Amino acid sequence: MIVLEDVIHLNKAKTTLFLGTLAWLVLFLFPEPNLSPKDIQEMLNENLLEIASLWLFLMAAMTFVAYLNHQGLIETLIYKFLPSRLGEKQLLFMVAIFSFVFSSLSDNITATLVSVALVLSLRLPPNKTLKFTVMVVFAVNSGGVSLITGDVTTLMIFLADKVAIQDLLWLSAPSFISVMFLAGLLSFGLSGELIIDGGQRRYDRVGMSIAFVFLATILSTIILNVIAGVPPVLTFLFGLSIMFLIGRFFHKDDDRESMLDYIRAIEFDTLLFFLGILLLVGMLKEIGVLDSLVKIYDMLPAVHANYVMGLLSSLVDNVPLTAALLKADPGMDHAGWLSLTYGVGVGGSLLVIGSAAGIVAMSKVPEVTFISYMKYSLFLLLAYSLGFAGSYGVGLVLFQ
Image (tube, rainbow, N blue to C red; front, top):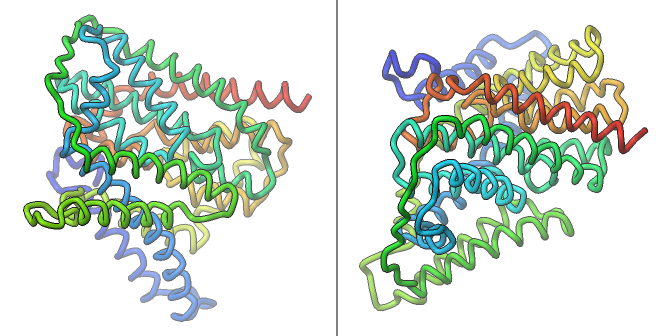
């Protein structure tokens, strides 16, 4: 139904929410003999807890970005560092590097929100906006794969003692090479030159204060998670509360604008889409459907199976897929686990519904649909294959 969205003209948030809730209703009404309603309720509660954490995190991050974008601070920052004249090819590489680096410093959802806001602020033609957005999705997923704070699946594999932090850092090399390779492929057909007119932009002290709080929240999320295991959602909600307090302090005699208004400004279509997808995938995980996927390791060598798992992560959410793999614990050496980390982290980029970055981009950029994104599937597959080969090669060098 998502694939046919352009044909049936039915919003993806509505279809996924319908199917996600229907799946759990069917499970309650027709349970397996060994499952009681209480057991299913516990499964649902666990699934809802995971979804709530993601929802609240997304809500906080999107509120920050909605405010900064509304105030023009993101455009101000971009135009401050961009030259007055810039070729489209050069701009594509700059966007790729920015998305890659920023996703290494923050989570991939926040990085996508900021990077997509950057692309939209440049007001490119629709076909070029699509190209740039495809680049952002791949670069964001690639940048987060080498840090435990950048991608949930990387953190899961690290906590299972399959890879070490210092080994993960080496993944940044093949990841960056694959991003530059894709940028080179996408740059064909880009020959224009942009005149960057930043105009006269004033720096509002409230906006600058909240921009500082946003950056501090991102850094604090990384640091507190590493040293104390603080969940990212808690740090971001704390940062959001500071944003509200700053707004109230500076506007205590001005009722024209409330920071709470920016919560109402975020795209709830995105949040409902996440809710439906995660409900559906969570139900499939609970009934054991995802566990059957790991049987591929009985049929293929580990490195080939890891490559296929990366491809499958573009169809199935990579978090439950990784959880199923860790539960099954297929026998692999360290090089194999390193390549699997890259595969499940970046493989979701092949389809727009395969990663959180793609879903966020699809909700923010009108030009991005399932079909339009697929036009670049071959380029994405080549870049993914190059990065995967590099990740396995890095593993062989480290653990020879």
